[in-house]
Length: 166
Image (cartoon, rainbow, N blue to C red; front, side):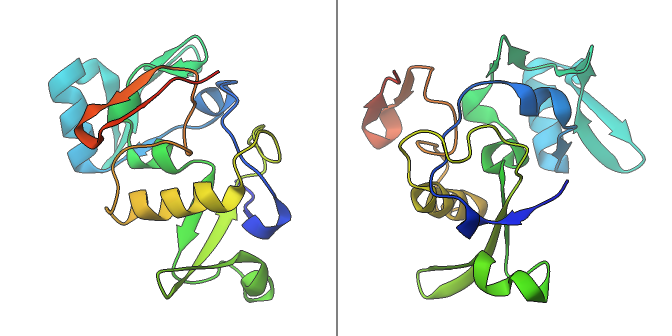
């Protein structure tokens, strides 16, 4: 996966193409794997060596229905963050300034996977999506508004938030 600093992009929005669910094999933490197995069955997760992955059938994530994720609220962290990659250190020193993103007086280095078709599409400023991705990665937020498809009607009643995408 080739990652590019975020400053090359203005907007990001999931366009619900589903291509990421076909292209990538999603790694899981042990906790995520056990949670998915408990809820959906052992056929949903593969163990390779000491690493867990979401099973794919015919090249597609087992949880993909059409172009959408059928487990929106339970998606693994890797899926909730994609196409963003967030680090406390730059991947390359030469792109340090282009990847730098300050949030709550901390510096993060943010990269995006240019494979994503939603880059520079839609109305969501990329900075809004990045802030949400940082908050999700570091456990400040567990729901998604900007870092996922808005095609599904989502009820986040525990937060008093409801939205329906166009």
